[in-house]
Image 1 (cartoon, rainbow, N blue to C red):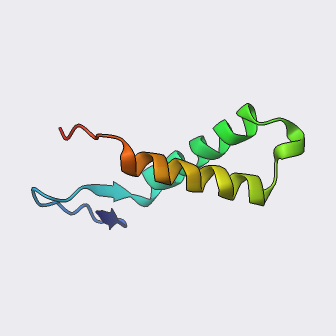
Image 2: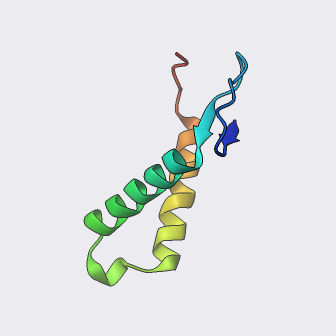
Length: 67
């Protein structure tokens, strides 16, 4: 993965280029889901860390269809 800052670079056939803006937008969307899906008493760094860790583990076990 390549993080593109400013000047657009073309990724190679085995790379994907993400802009800092798109990464920030995705992270903000994930954070919004955590806030919306959890009760307010679960809004803590420990809970968010746990859920993100569980999500990362789950992602590693899911098949990903390459496009």
